Image (cartoon, rainbow over all chains, first blue to last red; front, side, top):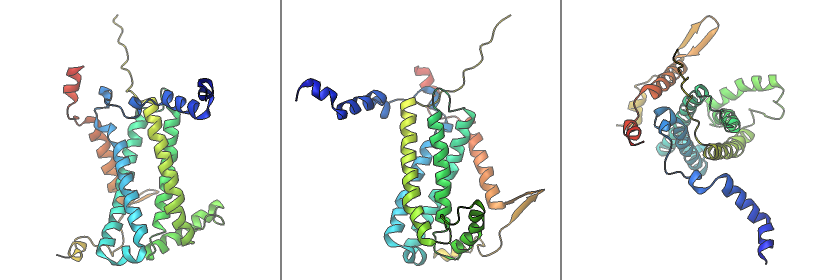
Length: 208
Length: 59
């Protein structure tokens, strides 16, 4: 294969484009700007850490099933771990959202970063709701019978049936986590490509 | 001590408490979480971050 042929390969061109867009030193940086040393910048990574615990505890629940998480003490513990990591996930994500909103974090060509965050937030809410109706207890029965009226009022009830445990469980453990993970990954990559949003510049004082 | 002893600390089998203010109705538990988030947000802005002064001096 000649040099020109290698240059024209789609793999070569795609690799070069990726490296140009996100060089390794930007993907895994050694340092961050001074303004990042504030507690308000901690909540994004707190959300990521909580998401990792949510996924890990969810995998454990999937391994053993409802009989286990309802009856055994270890099952109760993992079930609680799943719930409380979700609580921390949303808590940290809301503080992260407020911080970024007041920083106007969509500045400097970061609109896509902001929008992927918005869609991830909405996807996570849907994942949490399908989790509530997938508990397989009286609580989930009560929530699903209440939720069906709201969903039916939107007209989506025929397709998205909250009383269908199988369908809700599949949305909760396959579709929505997959979407949340992919969107979160994209969000983090975009943060790395564009960098962390800088603070607003102080207004220049003009002496008279 | 079994977990049931801890469960007795919080009555979980009673009706939830709600706050009413005009058309707004919110459970006390949700209200407490929102207050904690606002408190955390304000603390995150004003609390000193470890090593921030040292980094500024180095620059």
